[in-house]
Image (tube, rainbow, N blue to C red):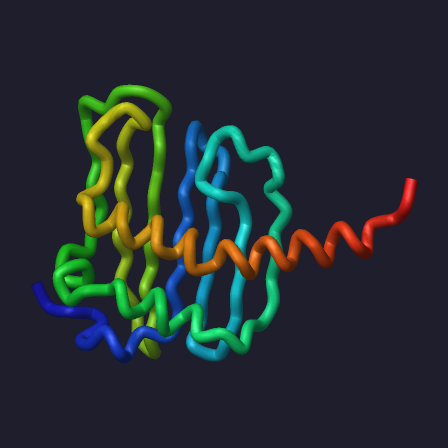
Length: 148
């Protein structure tokens, strides 16, 4: 398979979405210019689905990009588990450069095996890397909320 993004270091944007039963429960975008976009935690129990968009001086993008492997990019495509069990789930990871980019999509059940371990680890890393930023945005939101 030909690479659409020939080298990991050419990636400019990483976009991750996770849906369960058609509802978006996680959305993370990190870009090499410092853009951060975060919504949710990936948990069905998390009801705080406010979207936070901003810039960070922290190297969040570089840290996440370090988890991308050439194998991940080479295995781009859409994968579906025809015998899924549990809640229908959809994970989409998009890697963008100056060209068309690379898309990896998994359709699976919450009680199924799900995506490969490297993909699961990548999504967990994205959540961990952006957690402190999201917590700070929530703190700012709560400070600016009208007093009751």
